[in-house]
Image (cartoon, rainbow, N blue to C red; front, side):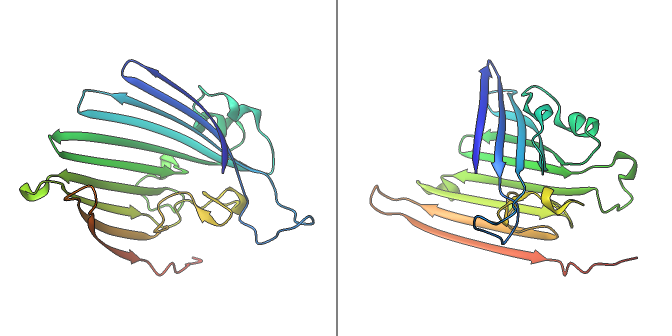
Length: 219
């Protein structure tokens, strides 16, 4: 999708603001298609706590059917802006971290909260939707030169990326913008990559995905 990005890097702090144009999840096309406008705004700040550890915070919002000047402020907290606009949009908060534990060994992780209602935390309320991703990489794995081993675990709770207004789903043109395993799913992934020379590369990759039945209970 098309977007405009504003970035800054001051000392240990990196900041980025993005405004992008998405496409509604519609099967219509052609000159007579009625496709409402859809946009995403994202703000991310990452802090290099040390030379080996970084931590970041992201807030984003998806909105549709209108143009909204309030979301163009690159230094606003989008969740607060969403609330001031009568909570019509799909606000998402995220955190991410990366840690170089030792030479050749790195761990990373990120978490996402979709449409959180603070008073409902811990009650199983459907609107409080979460996703997690944890992984790591080992360069020179098992003492073998040029052998890299990576592994990753992803868990996406039911209804994550969705919204009471279908036009505000976390997607563009029927393509999910988040973890590709989709909501109500869990993934285990690992890969080995060996490059013994400039001309030869061998890779082995495996992934196991569990998905829920997504049964809707009207009660």
